[in-house]
Length: 625
Image (cartoon, rainbow, N blue to C red; front, side, top):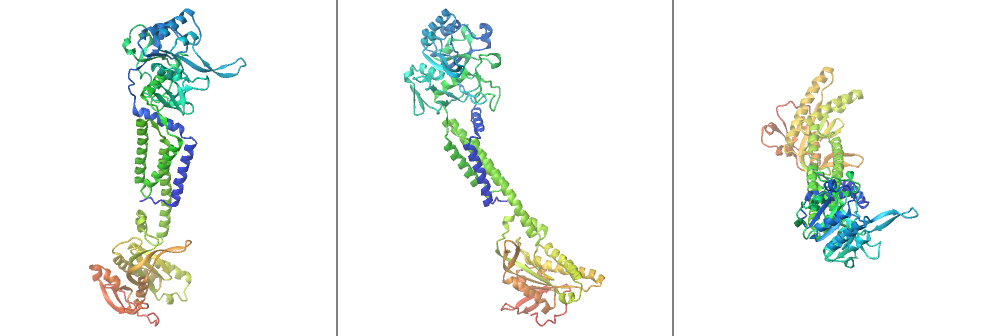
């Protein structure tokens, strides 16, 4: 059955569409959109980041030999000597206070000797002398900072769930000169740039050949290559003791940082990223240490693989397009075809958004459009099903008065095939009337008359409906019926004649029963005519009947009246006779004669059924003709 989109259906899908639009504008689906964004990373899969960025992990193995953190700065000085061929060494470790002066001096010399070391700064909230909390910018020990090639803050922006998707590139609010992040400072040092080369203009952070568009918070969405240990990672102690070839660090950016689970160390610095267990897929992925977040950021700058999120207007435009596309694809389709169309649209939407994310690194919302498709389809389908069921009930209630239940079931299988507004169709019309009923009903108890009349009309209706006929109306002691509507069938003339024969048989059965009661028999005359008529609902919105009008309807009534003249109970017009196919039924009919009737210029030839006792006394009513 086709889905007919009525105005109520458009109201439903329009309201649902507005709800989705409003929810999107209010950011109610943001959590789901973030989840979808993380899904794209898992769908793309883990990628090899190459060997140009290497991590030296201050891990459990190293702590077993070097002791708990913090380690002596002399150890870090020895490590720097091992990493002398690295392009840049960045310490994701905050050297804020003094220790042994000789040790601090040794580390400062090692930093200066290397010449390309970046140290960490940080922003922290501390209480002032008045007990008020305030943000402080903290720098390393002066002699270490002066020896370093660069400084960068290591603060990592984590969203709800301790997940990192973006990093802050620059701070312009603390000092007169922009302060770079740790990853930016390392990238600048590797390129031989100084602080004067770092600028923020028109929403773009620039340094050397790097140009990174940032948000109002000076943040950028970075790429990720995988969970923890995706980047080449070597244990600190293995590097220190010479168990790792130094060729792994030649001309590489080396990041030194803590690589310890949170529950085992107060120094641990771990976050979730789109690949790890804090999101959609665990799959053995462990939380990512902060030092590897910095590695991903640096790799993003070098590969230009940062992501940009589409502005709200573009996402709203996609929502509206998804809304309109869903309506266009599912309207006037069956629920199954509508579902397939909506499913294909959803797949195309999700696939398109993913491809744009993968190839253009442009983040479009997908949950909102998918919700739009699903809700519009579901809402429209539910409304259509409810409305269709109500229409089916109305149709059943309307036609059950006229046709047999089996015919109603056929109508309900394909209600679109039934035209109720008025259609011209060739049908066979029947009128039936009890001869002498007026004389019979005189001086009798009305209750008995009605009871007997109802008994008679019941079996007449059964005979009509048994042959696929439609009962139009009861006319006192008579009735009107037609064949060939609302269901159209080619043998409507045959069915009408067979119904007339069955009616006579049922009347004979009733007469035998009534004879036992001492009641006089009924003689029922039936007239049949075939021709075009307009069939449909006629009446007012408050009261409407399914009936038909036309010249051949009037002629059927005149033919029934001719039964008095021809003294037979079944009279069939020439128009019906000519439409009968050759066969046993047509052969059983015989010619009665032709007679002029009121309202028609030409005489009407008539036939009756042979082999049945259909004779009755000729009417003495002088005005019947």
